Length: 355
Image (cartoon, rainbow, N blue to C red; front, side, top):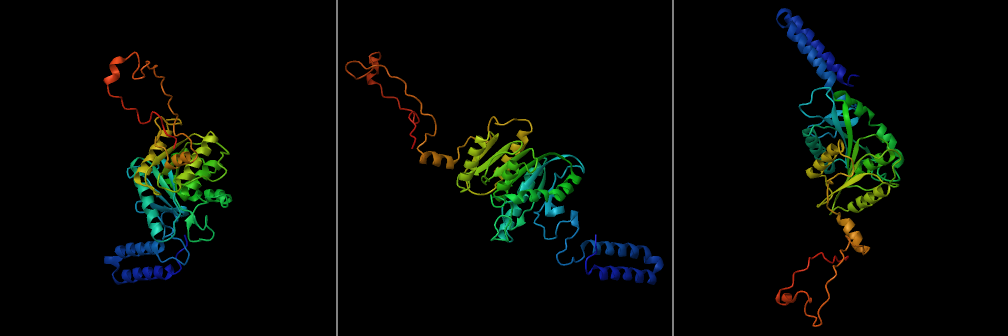
Protein backbone atom coordinates (compact mmCIF):
# COMPACT_ATOMS: atom_id res chain seq x y z
CA UNK A 1 0.00 0.00 0.00
CA UNK A 2 1.31 3.43 -0.84
CA UNK A 3 1.86 5.85 2.05
CA UNK A 4 -0.49 8.84 2.36
CA UNK A 5 0.54 12.01 0.55
CA UNK A 6 1.49 13.88 3.70
CA UNK A 7 2.33 10.76 5.71
CA UNK A 8 6.06 10.85 4.89
CA UNK A 9 6.72 13.84 7.10
CA UNK A 10 4.79 12.26 9.96
CA UNK A 11 6.77 9.05 9.61
CA UNK A 12 10.05 10.94 9.62
CA UNK A 13 9.00 12.91 12.70
CA UNK A 14 8.18 9.64 14.49
CA UNK A 15 11.50 8.07 13.61
CA UNK A 16 13.46 11.21 14.55
CA UNK A 17 11.69 11.39 17.91
CA UNK A 18 12.55 7.75 18.52
CA UNK A 19 16.24 8.37 17.71
CA UNK A 20 16.42 11.44 19.96
CA UNK A 21 14.90 9.56 22.87
CA UNK A 22 17.31 6.65 22.49
CA UNK A 23 20.30 9.00 22.37
CA UNK A 24 19.26 10.78 25.58
CA UNK A 25 18.70 7.66 27.65
CA UNK A 26 19.95 4.60 25.79
CA UNK A 27 19.78 2.16 28.66
CA UNK A 28 16.53 3.19 30.27
CA UNK A 29 14.28 4.05 27.40
CA UNK A 30 15.76 2.38 24.34
CA UNK A 31 13.28 -0.50 24.19
CA UNK A 32 10.22 1.68 24.94
CA UNK A 33 11.27 4.26 22.41
CA UNK A 34 11.82 1.69 19.70
CA UNK A 35 8.42 0.13 20.34
CA UNK A 36 6.77 3.55 20.49
CA UNK A 37 8.40 4.68 17.28
CA UNK A 38 7.41 1.54 15.43
CA UNK A 39 3.84 1.88 16.70
CA UNK A 40 3.68 5.50 15.59
CA UNK A 41 5.04 4.58 12.18
CA UNK A 42 2.45 1.81 11.76
CA UNK A 43 -0.42 4.04 12.86
CA UNK A 44 0.62 6.83 10.53
CA UNK A 45 0.93 4.52 7.56
CA UNK A 46 -2.40 2.87 8.28
CA UNK A 47 -4.54 5.84 9.32
CA UNK A 48 -2.65 8.87 8.18
CA UNK A 49 -4.46 11.58 6.23
CA UNK A 50 -5.28 10.18 2.76
CA UNK A 51 -4.75 12.01 -0.46
CA UNK A 52 -7.74 13.54 -2.23
CA UNK A 53 -9.81 10.76 -3.81
CA UNK A 54 -7.71 8.03 -2.22
CA UNK A 55 -9.21 5.07 -0.41
CA UNK A 56 -7.97 3.85 2.95
CA UNK A 57 -6.86 0.25 2.99
CA UNK A 58 -8.96 -0.47 6.05
CA UNK A 59 -10.56 -3.92 6.21
CA UNK A 60 -10.02 -4.74 2.59
CA UNK A 61 -10.00 -1.37 0.85
CA UNK A 62 -13.43 0.18 1.47
CA UNK A 63 -13.56 4.00 1.42
CA UNK A 64 -13.47 5.82 4.75
CA UNK A 65 -16.88 7.37 4.02
CA UNK A 66 -18.42 3.91 3.60
CA UNK A 67 -22.17 3.58 3.81
CA UNK A 68 -21.87 0.59 6.16
CA UNK A 69 -24.26 0.52 9.11
CA UNK A 70 -23.17 -0.26 12.64
CA UNK A 71 -22.37 -3.93 13.03
CA UNK A 72 -21.05 -4.34 9.47
CA UNK A 73 -17.43 -4.10 8.40
CA UNK A 74 -16.31 -2.37 5.19
CA UNK A 75 -14.80 -4.77 2.66
CA UNK A 76 -13.35 -4.46 -0.81
CA UNK A 77 -15.52 -2.90 -3.46
CA UNK A 78 -17.28 -0.51 -1.08
CA UNK A 79 -19.44 -3.33 0.34
CA UNK A 80 -20.31 -4.18 3.94
CA UNK A 81 -20.05 -7.56 5.66
CA UNK A 82 -21.41 -9.13 8.82
CA UNK A 83 -21.27 -12.66 10.21
CA UNK A 84 -22.64 -14.34 13.34
CA UNK A 85 -20.59 -13.29 16.34
CA UNK A 86 -19.95 -16.91 17.32
CA UNK A 87 -18.84 -18.04 13.85
CA UNK A 88 -15.28 -19.35 13.75
CA UNK A 89 -12.93 -17.88 11.13
CA UNK A 90 -13.07 -19.81 7.86
CA UNK A 91 -16.21 -21.68 8.96
CA UNK A 92 -18.71 -22.14 6.08
CA UNK A 93 -21.87 -20.02 6.28
CA UNK A 94 -24.93 -19.36 4.11
CA UNK A 95 -24.72 -15.88 2.61
CA UNK A 96 -27.45 -13.29 2.09
CA UNK A 97 -26.60 -10.67 -0.55
CA UNK A 98 -28.60 -7.54 0.23
CA UNK A 99 -29.42 -5.05 -2.54
CA UNK A 100 -30.59 -1.68 -1.21
CA UNK A 101 -33.26 0.67 -2.45
CA UNK A 102 -32.32 3.93 -4.12
CA UNK A 103 -30.94 6.69 -1.89
CA UNK A 104 -28.80 9.79 -1.90
CA UNK A 105 -26.74 11.40 0.81
CA UNK A 106 -28.73 12.71 3.74
CA UNK A 107 -31.88 11.31 5.35
CA UNK A 108 -32.40 8.71 2.60
CA UNK A 109 -28.94 7.27 3.24
CA UNK A 110 -29.65 7.14 6.99
CA UNK A 111 -32.85 5.20 6.29
CA UNK A 112 -30.93 2.78 4.11
CA UNK A 113 -28.32 2.24 6.82
CA UNK A 114 -31.14 1.39 9.20
CA UNK A 115 -32.50 -1.24 6.80
CA UNK A 116 -29.02 -2.60 6.26
CA UNK A 117 -28.44 -2.81 10.02
CA UNK A 118 -31.71 -4.67 10.62
CA UNK A 119 -31.09 -7.12 7.77
CA UNK A 120 -27.66 -7.92 9.20
CA UNK A 121 -28.89 -8.14 12.79
CA UNK A 122 -31.70 -10.57 12.00
CA UNK A 123 -29.77 -12.64 9.47
CA UNK A 124 -26.68 -13.14 11.63
CA UNK A 125 -28.90 -14.10 14.58
CA UNK A 126 -30.19 -16.97 12.41
CA UNK A 127 -26.77 -18.12 11.25
CA UNK A 128 -26.42 -16.25 7.95
CA UNK A 129 -23.57 -14.03 6.84
CA UNK A 130 -24.61 -10.80 5.09
CA UNK A 131 -22.94 -8.92 2.25
CA UNK A 132 -24.57 -5.54 1.64
CA UNK A 133 -23.55 -4.26 -1.78
CA UNK A 134 -23.66 -0.68 -3.01
CA UNK A 135 -25.07 0.58 -6.28
CA UNK A 136 -23.75 3.47 -8.34
CA UNK A 137 -24.73 7.12 -8.60
CA UNK A 138 -26.92 7.81 -11.60
CA UNK A 139 -27.33 4.15 -12.61
CA UNK A 140 -31.12 4.29 -12.94
CA UNK A 141 -31.96 8.00 -13.31
CA UNK A 142 -29.55 9.86 -15.63
CA UNK A 143 -31.19 13.16 -14.73
CA UNK A 144 -30.65 12.53 -10.99
CA UNK A 145 -26.97 11.73 -10.83
CA UNK A 146 -26.80 11.84 -7.01
CA UNK A 147 -29.13 8.84 -6.62
CA UNK A 148 -27.31 5.64 -5.69
CA UNK A 149 -29.18 2.81 -7.37
CA UNK A 150 -29.17 -0.31 -9.54
CA UNK A 151 -30.23 -0.97 -13.14
CA UNK A 152 -33.97 -1.38 -12.82
CA UNK A 153 -35.69 -0.84 -16.15
CA UNK A 154 -35.49 -1.59 -19.84
CA UNK A 155 -33.35 1.52 -20.48
CA UNK A 156 -30.59 0.42 -18.10
CA UNK A 157 -30.80 -3.35 -18.45
CA UNK A 158 -27.66 -3.49 -20.58
CA UNK A 159 -25.62 -2.24 -17.62
CA UNK A 160 -26.66 -5.14 -15.39
CA UNK A 161 -23.88 -7.64 -16.29
CA UNK A 162 -21.16 -5.07 -15.54
CA UNK A 163 -22.75 -4.31 -12.15
CA UNK A 164 -22.75 -7.98 -11.18
CA UNK A 165 -19.18 -8.40 -12.38
CA UNK A 166 -18.17 -5.47 -10.14
CA UNK A 167 -19.31 -7.52 -7.11
CA UNK A 168 -16.39 -9.90 -7.46
CA UNK A 169 -13.89 -8.08 -5.17
CA UNK A 170 -16.49 -7.90 -2.40
CA UNK A 171 -17.46 -11.55 -2.84
CA UNK A 172 -13.84 -12.69 -2.77
CA UNK A 173 -13.19 -10.63 0.34
CA UNK A 174 -16.23 -12.07 2.11
CA UNK A 175 -15.43 -15.63 1.06
CA UNK A 176 -11.96 -15.35 2.57
CA UNK A 177 -13.64 -14.77 5.93
CA UNK A 178 -16.27 -17.51 5.60
CA UNK A 179 -16.74 -19.83 2.60
CA UNK A 180 -20.32 -19.83 1.32
CA UNK A 181 -22.49 -22.93 1.67
CA UNK A 182 -25.52 -21.35 -0.01
CA UNK A 183 -26.11 -17.94 -1.56
CA UNK A 184 -29.34 -15.95 -1.46
CA UNK A 185 -30.31 -12.54 -2.82
CA UNK A 186 -32.66 -10.12 -1.06
CA UNK A 187 -33.53 -6.97 -3.00
CA UNK A 188 -35.70 -4.14 -1.70
CA UNK A 189 -37.47 -1.59 -3.93
CA UNK A 190 -34.95 -0.53 -6.59
CA UNK A 191 -32.77 -3.43 -5.43
CA UNK A 192 -35.80 -5.70 -5.83
CA UNK A 193 -36.12 -4.77 -9.50
CA UNK A 194 -32.43 -5.58 -9.91
CA UNK A 195 -32.79 -8.89 -8.04
CA UNK A 196 -35.57 -9.90 -10.41
CA UNK A 197 -33.53 -8.85 -13.42
CA UNK A 198 -30.56 -10.91 -12.19
CA UNK A 199 -32.74 -13.97 -11.70
CA UNK A 200 -34.48 -13.62 -15.08
CA UNK A 201 -31.25 -13.12 -17.07
CA UNK A 202 -29.25 -15.67 -15.00
CA UNK A 203 -26.60 -13.04 -14.24
CA UNK A 204 -25.72 -14.55 -10.87
CA UNK A 205 -26.27 -18.09 -9.66
CA UNK A 206 -28.04 -17.89 -6.30
CA UNK A 207 -30.02 -20.59 -4.52
CA UNK A 208 -33.11 -18.35 -4.08
CA UNK A 209 -34.21 -14.74 -4.56
CA UNK A 210 -36.55 -12.43 -2.64
CA UNK A 211 -38.01 -9.51 -4.61
CA UNK A 212 -39.47 -7.04 -2.10
CA UNK A 213 -41.81 -4.17 -3.05
CA UNK A 214 -40.60 -3.73 -6.62
CA UNK A 215 -42.02 -4.90 -9.94
CA UNK A 216 -41.19 -6.55 -13.28
CA UNK A 217 -38.44 -5.66 -15.72
CA UNK A 218 -39.73 -6.72 -19.11
CA UNK A 219 -39.62 -9.21 -20.60
CA UNK A 220 -40.17 -11.53 -17.63
CA UNK A 221 -38.83 -14.77 -19.04
CA UNK A 222 -36.14 -17.05 -17.67
CA UNK A 223 -33.13 -17.45 -19.92
CA UNK A 224 -31.60 -20.14 -17.72
CA UNK A 225 -32.60 -22.09 -14.65
CA UNK A 226 -35.57 -20.97 -12.52
CA UNK A 227 -34.43 -20.58 -8.91
CA UNK A 228 -37.10 -20.24 -6.18
CA UNK A 229 -38.54 -16.72 -5.96
CA UNK A 230 -40.47 -15.00 -3.19
CA UNK A 231 -42.39 -11.85 -4.05
CA UNK A 232 -43.23 -9.39 -1.27
CA UNK A 233 -45.91 -6.73 -1.50
CA UNK A 234 -47.98 -4.48 0.78
CA UNK A 235 -51.61 -3.46 0.33
CA UNK A 236 -50.99 0.29 0.73
CA UNK A 237 -47.89 0.34 -1.47
CA UNK A 238 -48.28 1.67 -5.02
CA UNK A 239 -45.76 -0.93 -6.17
CA UNK A 240 -48.15 -3.78 -5.33
CA UNK A 241 -49.79 -3.51 -8.72
CA UNK A 242 -46.42 -4.18 -10.34
CA UNK A 243 -45.81 -7.10 -7.99
CA UNK A 244 -49.14 -8.63 -8.95
CA UNK A 245 -48.20 -8.22 -12.61
CA UNK A 246 -44.85 -9.91 -11.91
CA UNK A 247 -46.70 -12.71 -10.11
CA UNK A 248 -48.89 -13.29 -13.17
CA UNK A 249 -45.99 -13.21 -15.61
CA UNK A 250 -43.98 -15.70 -13.55
CA UNK A 251 -47.01 -17.98 -13.50
CA UNK A 252 -47.28 -17.78 -17.29
CA UNK A 253 -43.58 -18.71 -17.51
CA UNK A 254 -44.14 -21.72 -15.19
CA UNK A 255 -41.64 -20.27 -12.73
CA UNK A 256 -42.04 -21.64 -9.17
CA UNK A 257 -42.61 -18.77 -6.77
CA UNK A 258 -44.54 -17.63 -3.72
CA UNK A 259 -46.11 -14.28 -2.84
CA UNK A 260 -45.99 -12.86 0.68
CA UNK A 261 -48.58 -10.12 1.28
CA UNK A 262 -49.07 -7.82 4.28
CA UNK A 263 -50.84 -4.58 5.10
CA UNK A 264 -48.96 -1.28 5.32
CA UNK A 265 -46.89 0.66 2.83
CA UNK A 266 -43.54 0.81 1.07
CA UNK A 267 -40.99 -0.33 3.65
CA UNK A 268 -38.87 -3.28 4.73
CA UNK A 269 -40.01 -3.93 8.31
CA UNK A 270 -38.55 -6.64 10.51
CA UNK A 271 -41.46 -8.91 9.64
CA UNK A 272 -40.48 -8.80 5.95
CA UNK A 273 -36.87 -9.62 6.77
CA UNK A 274 -38.00 -12.51 8.96
CA UNK A 275 -40.22 -13.84 6.16
CA UNK A 276 -37.35 -13.61 3.64
CA UNK A 277 -35.01 -15.56 5.91
CA UNK A 278 -37.71 -18.17 6.55
CA UNK A 279 -38.16 -18.54 2.80
CA UNK A 280 -34.42 -19.07 2.33
CA UNK A 281 -34.39 -21.69 5.07
CA UNK A 282 -37.42 -23.53 3.75
CA UNK A 283 -36.14 -23.70 0.17
CA UNK A 284 -33.14 -25.72 1.37
CA UNK A 285 -35.40 -28.71 2.01
CA UNK A 286 -38.82 -27.91 0.50
CA UNK A 287 -39.76 -27.68 -3.17
CA UNK A 288 -42.07 -24.95 -4.46
CA UNK A 289 -44.97 -24.42 -4.20
CA UNK A 290 -44.49 -24.30 -0.44
CA UNK A 291 -47.08 -26.05 1.69
CA UNK A 292 -48.25 -24.14 3.62
CA UNK A 293 -47.46 -21.04 1.54
CA UNK A 294 -45.65 -18.05 2.96
CA UNK A 295 -48.92 -16.10 2.91
CA UNK A 296 -52.55 -16.88 2.14
CA UNK A 297 -53.57 -13.23 1.92
CA UNK A 298 -54.83 -11.97 -1.44
CA UNK A 299 -53.17 -8.71 -2.57
CA UNK A 300 -55.52 -5.73 -2.50
CA UNK A 301 -54.35 -4.75 -6.00
CA UNK A 302 -55.57 -8.10 -7.29
CA UNK A 303 -58.92 -7.64 -5.58
CA UNK A 304 -59.26 -4.20 -7.13
CA UNK A 305 -58.37 -5.59 -10.56
CA UNK A 306 -60.99 -8.31 -10.32
CA UNK A 307 -63.63 -5.87 -9.20
CA UNK A 308 -62.79 -3.57 -12.12
CA UNK A 309 -63.02 -6.50 -14.54
CA UNK A 310 -66.21 -7.78 -12.86
CA UNK A 311 -64.44 -11.10 -12.29
CA UNK A 312 -65.66 -13.34 -9.45
CA UNK A 313 -63.24 -13.39 -6.52
CA UNK A 314 -63.99 -17.07 -5.95
CA UNK A 315 -66.19 -19.72 -7.56
CA UNK A 316 -69.84 -19.08 -6.70
CA UNK A 317 -71.30 -22.11 -4.92
CA UNK A 318 -74.29 -23.70 -6.60
CA UNK A 319 -77.60 -23.50 -4.78
CA UNK A 320 -78.98 -26.75 -3.50
CA UNK A 321 -82.26 -27.80 -5.05
CA UNK A 322 -85.16 -27.26 -2.66
CA UNK A 323 -88.08 -29.70 -2.32
CA UNK A 324 -91.33 -28.80 -4.04
CA UNK A 325 -93.90 -26.85 -2.02
CA UNK A 326 -97.30 -28.18 -1.18
CA UNK A 327 -100.30 -26.70 -2.96
CA UNK A 328 -100.64 -24.10 -0.23
CA UNK A 329 -97.14 -22.89 -0.90
CA UNK A 330 -96.47 -22.31 2.81
CA UNK A 331 -93.90 -25.05 3.54
CA UNK A 332 -92.38 -28.23 2.13
CA UNK A 333 -94.97 -30.97 2.13
CA UNK A 334 -92.56 -33.28 3.90
CA UNK A 335 -92.09 -30.93 6.88
CA UNK A 336 -95.41 -29.63 8.13
CA UNK A 337 -94.02 -28.96 11.61
CA UNK A 338 -91.60 -26.38 10.21
CA UNK A 339 -94.31 -23.81 9.65
CA UNK A 340 -93.84 -22.24 13.04
CA UNK A 341 -90.04 -22.54 13.12
CA UNK A 342 -87.92 -19.43 12.43
CA UNK A 343 -86.05 -19.34 9.15
CA UNK A 344 -82.34 -20.27 9.42
CA UNK A 345 -79.97 -17.43 8.55
CA UNK A 346 -78.27 -17.84 5.18
CA UNK A 347 -74.48 -18.02 5.04
CA UNK A 348 -73.19 -14.56 4.08
CA UNK A 349 -71.08 -15.99 1.27
CA UNK A 350 -73.65 -18.42 -0.05
CA UNK A 351 -74.11 -16.13 -3.04
CA UNK A 352 -70.84 -14.24 -3.46
CA UNK A 353 -71.42 -10.90 -5.11
CA UNK A 354 -68.77 -10.43 -7.84
CA UNK A 355 -68.85 -6.71 -7.27
